[in-house]
Length: 493
Image (cartoon, rainbow, N blue to C red; front, side):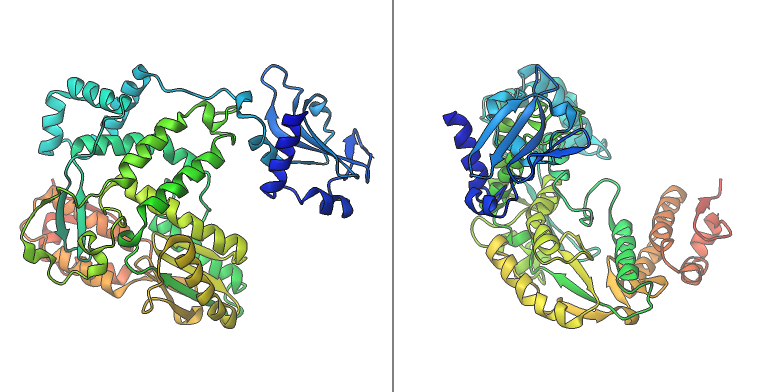
């Protein structure tokens, strides 16, 4: 009984239910229980059932029994199949003794199997890279060695290659060693399905089935919903975070990741009837997360190119200029996942605490659609304080704006106007420059490049623009032809 009472007290401390004295005065926990079609014990007792079945008897489940005097018990009771609960409470599933669940423990043999899968993921689209070829020449031995390092907890990331890219904009990139990229994919395969269940629908970056085109469609959907299909005015608050990747606090990120994993451990997984803790070794995942997150990519990194390549790069865009313990390397698979986990705190704040339904985000570029311009103005300070207190981030002062939807809204390379979308001017300029650079390219490369640009432009109203850019290029026209809709280019044989 003492153990049961302590569980009930923890429920109150976590505010899963109202404090019992207050709740009983309001008669909320004494909501009664169902027996067939009748409601019994209303005002006297309440049974709050979890979604977790007893392993040995599927008719049994944990429940919290509260009476009007404030007394409470937590029981592993029967009759769940009769639907005696007035409302289910899945939160109680996380407050039962963890010993009632069977935790999954990774074996050494399974770790090697998982590493081989991660290796195949890491080599995708990189079969011709010299580092990948070197690793593949002695793949089995190297995977076994990596398995042993991970199993013994002696693995340490190697030196990253640092360089500058100039398109579509100047950025600093850190490329991890191929062995480290295998570990990144290993962590991603373990943790990503768990984190995915915590994300909101309108987080678009680096998620399967989402992306830039999906993000634009969702923005259009939110605008149409808020404006009653453009029949009334509404406004869009555009937010951008200053130096996002470079200002992520790595220790804070690790804490957020571990807290998210702990919350999800005893939630139902994608495998029917199993909790996440029953199919994923959370302790091993936490170990991997700590090694990857707390690693400082600047230490012992190898600079590729000239130091003058960094000229003109803002300090807020370089890991070499960030505060100690801050910054994630752009270029790692895990950085994309961690950026979503970190900003998920902000997403949930905007959606749940600020009550902004028409909200979406792609990496650090977010929007809120609302009928009231004044409400959006008042939100800016609230969002600024939340970002600073919860994540240590700052809104970009020059990229936080409120726009009337009738005048057009720019998002993810697309200019959204009522009933139509256009290609952004900067994207047009970049495509023109890239197309002019195809002079002398092979027909195969020309076909792939042109079709990639057509894919970008094909989601917008751009038929005349496509004809203007591509049909005026003699090299493209002499080496292939377009279909009638100007959405597909085929090389000549």
